[in-house]
Length: 101
Image 1 (cartoon, rainbow, N blue to C red):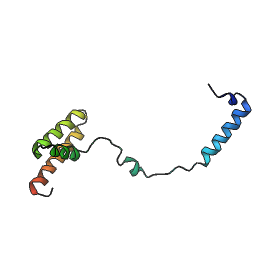
Image 2 (cartoon, rainbow, N blue to C red):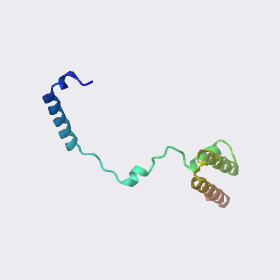
Image 3 (cartoon, one colour):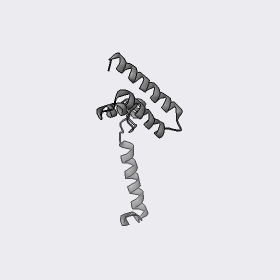
Image 4 (cartoon, helix red, strand yellow):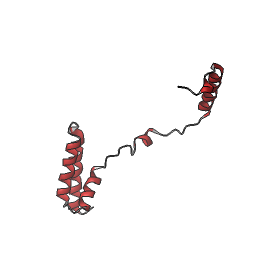
């Protein structure tokens, strides 16, 4: 259902020309592909998951195991994601042992 003023074919043609001109003159911001990719996920990172569990009182080893379990449940069809989470967990625990975190 169109507005009544667009029932006339000449009016509709004039409206379309005006809209096309405004669209053509519009200057969109062009962003780089890396800007579009960065921060597109709403899912917390593995380290964010671990830190949240640590802030709730879990020991580092338990927090890492729970976070890995969460990732396994959420990404059971993506073994690469689970493997990456395990690697990040081992790296996190290694940094804790060294005292760099």
